[in-house]
Length: 170
Image 1 (cartoon, rainbow, N blue to C red):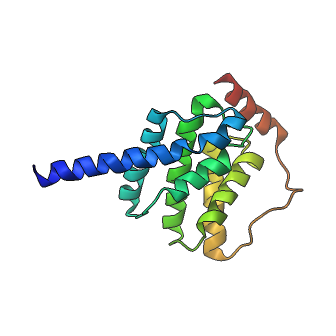
Image 2: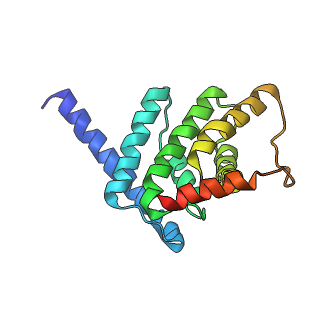
Image 3: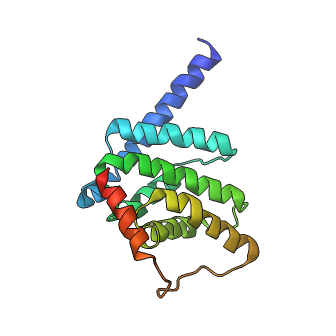
């Protein structure tokens, strides 16, 4: 048996083991009408591994992925049809920000912040979170600005309605 065959089988075992751990999050997410199938769970892990390689990052477990799922599954903006894809996008966004900030922001803080922004400033529009809000996070940490939690911040209601219309039309 060749070394690459052994490595591939070992990697497959780890993917299956991690996918099983991801499936355990269904106990909570099902309360919100969301469920990850075994195939969804494997896809999340395989994509996670690719993201880690691309960003030159190492994780010894799937705790970050699990925390992302647990934080986001209660979002009123997540739908079953885009659940897996959103988790994958958030994973990538998480690692992008961690790299940009040289890990200066804690994992839990970043996950909570992403969920807060997704729900309260982006109203479930992932492109806003990946663009405008991500850059704000990076700029605030690089230049020492405080996190903007001003509840009186003006929101363009016409823009929100446009995003909601787009979201519901999908």
